[in-house]
Image (tube, rainbow, N blue to C red; front, side):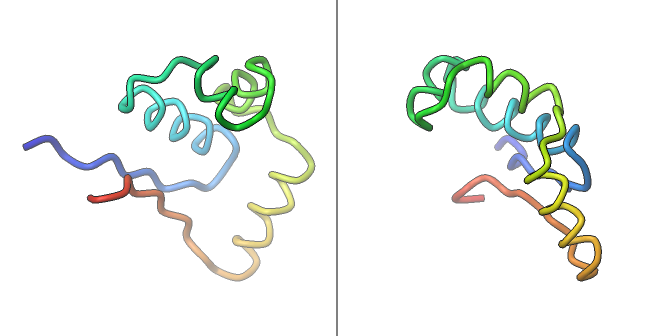
Length: 77
């Protein structure tokens, strides 16, 4: 039985890696996921590469200031 996908997110790079791995595990292309999200594929590509946006930086900083660890686990794991 394969190990469930689990990611600790503490920066934009780790979030991007998680998105990429979860997407790949579901056999979705960037174009397919971007369409489902209602965003352009280039936005998803930048997200997966760990591009820092102001909103993402603020969200991650809020979790940091609150002393909260963000752990992403695939549904059903």
